[in-house]
Amino acid sequence: MSLQKTISPVDGRVFVERELASGARIDATLDAAVAAQRLWRATPLAERSAILTRFVEIMESRADEIGEELAWQMGRPIRYAPTEIRRGFAERARYMISASPAALADIPVSPAPGFTRFIRREPAGVVFTVAPWNYPYLTSVNSIVPALLAGNAAVLKHSAQTPLCAERYEQAFDDAGLPAGVFQFLHLSHSDVERVIGDPRIGFVAFTGSVPGGHAVQAAAAGRFIATGLELGGKDPAYVRADADLAHAVENLVDGAMFNSGQSCCGIERIYVHRDLYPEFVRRAVELTRTYVLGNPLDAATTLGPMVRASAAEFVRAQVAEAVAQGAQAHLDPRDFPADAPGSPYLAPQILTGVNHSMRVMSEETFGPVAPIVSVETDDEAIDLMNDSAYGLTAAIWTCDADAALRIGDSIETGTWFMNRCDYLDPALAWTGVKDSGRGCALSVLGFDQFTRPKSFHLRTVTA
Image (cartoon, rainbow, N blue to C red):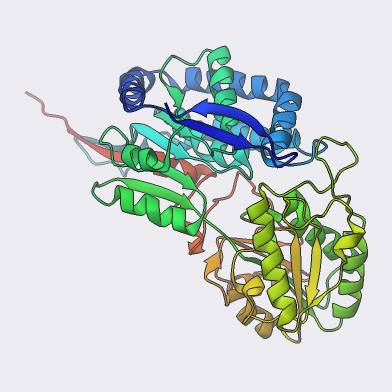
């Protein structure tokens, strides 16, 4: 028997242990999913939607309990953790439910005498979702809900850091009346994840995680003609134009860089500020960041919890130390945040200036509470620097000129372009990335496409 242990970043203790699925358990789960999907796909969409609506309501009713579990599992402060369910999770699920009738309807083609022709969207079969720990419900809902609405069965493998999230899904689905086998979860080793991806009973793989993880998924799927959706990393930039509302930009961007201890694929990791606003922007950003309270996430006063594990915090410390050694200036003293301790997951936030693109902190994904800020002179300089990245998930501009925002946005290599906001997913818009940020599309009416395949009906009427 192999055990999976979840070490809490709160106090370093084992918070939960779970047995990894055996080969027999994996086979039984996939067999049950295939059998259940045959019946589920024949269930009317209105009935599927009703069950999923009840599921969302049940999850909302348990948001406080789920939030406390998240604090223990991955360190998000308890004052914020329940909102992952009440806001983003519920908003996305309800949007996909409301969009499903139009998104899954047959596609008519132009009339032809004597023929009936249309395209029907058929479910992919069994969808295998591999989800991360940083936003464990927000990332997984992007695939689980639309996959089920489209008539698929779903199998969820959650991060070893957040195993209780998969179990919460199953409990809520059971209570909502979802037929047995339509949704299941597995606690798996890395090698068994690869085995499941390569299994012919799987029809689609939805993965959210690192770029190396995305390559591993692709390699595991390479022997089959199977599609994969990959939401990978980001090094998301922001540009504060000379005409920006400075107070609004500072407030949004500090939050976009620091929320969830910076552990967000679409969090702000690079800030470019027009030289006219640069000195005041830096001053205000430093002042605002000093107000964060780093501490135990179970304390209601805490606004910045620990990172997910000590090694993640050490990675960020190393990036910052290396940048400072190369000439960057660190504006915050970790000693002003008493909970910060080298070797621990508790990491003080940091604002950096004097940075450039030769530094890892400007090129590698940091995934921590660090905001490097660069002064720029023109829109064209900002565009060049924003595009100078291996990633392209989101990018943002702060400006009062909507025409300029559209013009600049057309030149930015990104999946989502924001004006005067950041670090947010609108479920009505396609969630996608370019370059090393992945491929595929989740959310919006387009998000159903990856969970279905087109089937053409070409029916000729023959009269006697």
